[in-house]
Length: 141
Image (cartoon, rainbow, N blue to C red; front, side, top):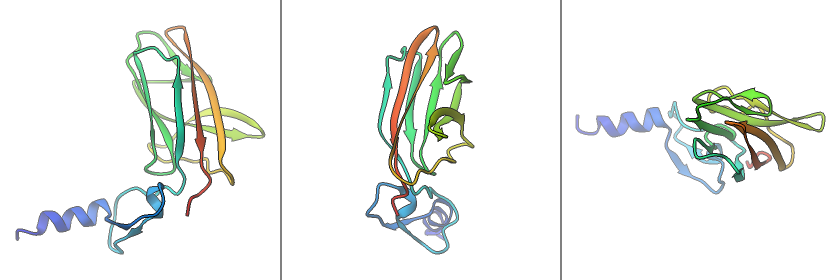
C-alpha cells in the first residue's frame, strides 16, 4: 500500500488544515488526528540577554509556550534559582505579581495569562549574569 506512510503521518502528527493564528492549537485539524501541537498561547519577543556561548535558549510554542534551554556550561547554571540541567524546558510564571522560573512538563506550559504578560528573570551561567525576557500571550483562539 503505497499511501500508508502518508496516512500514518496524518494520523500521528495531526494535520493542520487552516490557520490564522501563530498558536499551533488554533488551527483546524483533521478529526482523526492523534498527535501534534495544541497550544493556544505563545512566547513572543523572546530575548536571551548577555548569556555565555555555552548556554542556548529558544521558545517552543508547541503546547502553550515554554523556553528550551541547552546547557553546555562547565559550572552551575540557574534561572531564577532553578538549577538548569543539560536540556531543560522552563517557563516564567507570574504569581501574586512576582515572576518566577519553573520547570515545565516537557513542552507543555502551565501558565496562561488572561492578557499578554511581559516576563523577565535573571540567571547565572558559569558566574555570568544573563536574562531571559519574553511576552507570554493570552490565548489566541
